[in-house]
Image 1 (tube, rainbow, N blue to C red):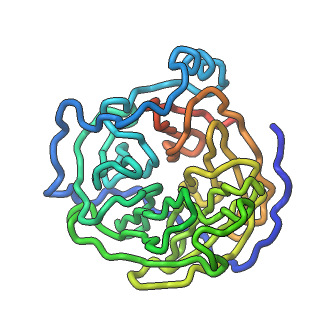
Image 2: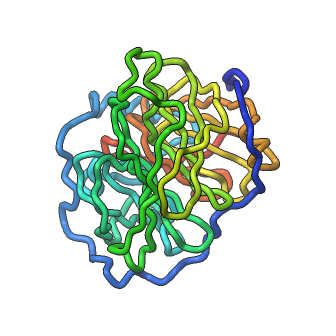
Image 3: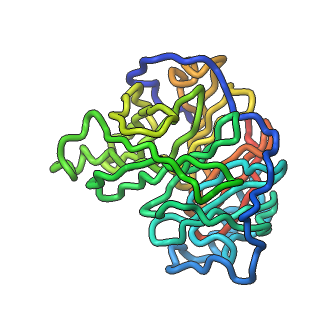
Length: 307
């Protein structure tokens, strides 16, 4: 597989940690699935039949279900609080709702979150059962209200907020297109902090890595690394053993391995093509060698990593 160029800058090490997979109590406020939940507001796909044929040619990828009438424009995936289930959600313009899915994309229930969905783009959880929704989609690079919502599924209406700003952004938006690198569609929790991965809209092939504490408050994010990623990052997933980070892009993914989190951020990413799979937006580890991947068009895949 082609390898991307090496990490441009990295600093700030932390110890390895990963949310455990134990289930927490089922949310009492969780609603049962209803027919037709999540109707897409627009068609972002190309030719469905051509896309399906192209996806069928990707080694290790198979479609296991469809989210087309389940999750409106799925924008991320995360392990849910019951074993073998996953949360997904829609992005800008969709309801402030989490959709509980099984490994085939079947809808098992919904959670209405007590926070607005300005532009939800990512979801992760810690090792104590807390979840973190990244409401930091920033297509135009002009938002000043970036926030991560923290909550527990058993009490989804009780939300606390982690407000943040970027230390290196002084214009909203930056005047030059090349400086439009303040959109974030990927985040994850690790070792007491939320880690944010930028989606470079300036086409500089750089994903900036920021971090903020996982406690409610208002912060200036810390810029800790610049990853040479020749693609636009749409989601992030850390393997349960903490030794592999996957950054999903549109029709591709990037794999970074290491014995510690610091090593991962120094690793040379390995690139895997998913060309033809659609607008891939959500990724989560099903097991150590397998990802579940969702697209905005509604495809739900299982992908066996090639290495």
